[in-house]
Image (tube, rainbow, N blue to C red; front, side, top):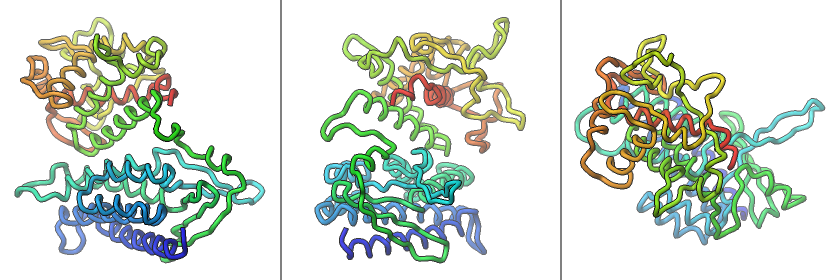
Length: 408
């Protein structure tokens, strides 16, 4: 980075701090005479602007060769294509957040936060979709998700932005140099400290996410990608975008389902027989004859139902085949995870759109006995589309299966 780029990048960080202060003022709801919904929309707008400022910051760190990619992003707001283009210029363009701590001897040490704690490029894609959904022009009526859900989502992503930028490293010149940018105190201007790496290899191995060689994508990369898709869709589901379950269903199908014409990711990795997946079942007595055997429909202490439902302790583990074929719904139809996933992915718009079979119609209707459901702690009323709720729980099981997640 030349001095001009450094100066401009610091200016961008200062503007992000200002936008963050505006976000904090409006994120808690109504301010003076401003309607609560309008206040939430203003807070959401700040997050979108921060993303756009960050996008230009990436261009400053890469250089002029990346300007056409930014021009395309500015015109079309295709953030996925934007990040794809940036990786072609510099695979390590993205900031590396750090945590600064003092050792017992009083020396300053750096550590790296868990990737789930800060805003990743994939999180940016999800956040932009969330912002667009809240801010896009719509007919007269309420928000597509509740105000409380929007507030919860905004706070989640704002914390991730803060964790990303509070203190972060920018590596340039093939890791020969590193710049430490720090946001500083609330009223302070961002600062920079330049370092010369002693060992290029040592600095590279500190990266949290292992990467394949340029131009190659391994099966492990595909596994990581599908699990990341599932995680992001779960975040969107938990803030009110319930139809993300359809995307989750497609990802689970890609990971697990084998046909005569295609092999699942786990089959291609030759690990399908070894992986063990968590199940939420076997919590009820065998003599019990419920309308649905899924424990999700047990009432919580405060009324309603929590999604996802807590996993049993100790964890119940199944082989992939057992998990896939386990019965999870008993009403007019008895359905396994496999049937619910495939019917959702193949009929509900995940990969195809077709007339819904009777089993899907039954799942859409749900159970008349359930009067209330809570999503991420927020009351959302009488549930519909029970297959969406079930699939969210399947995702919770997968993301907590160490035998699977440990492979990445």
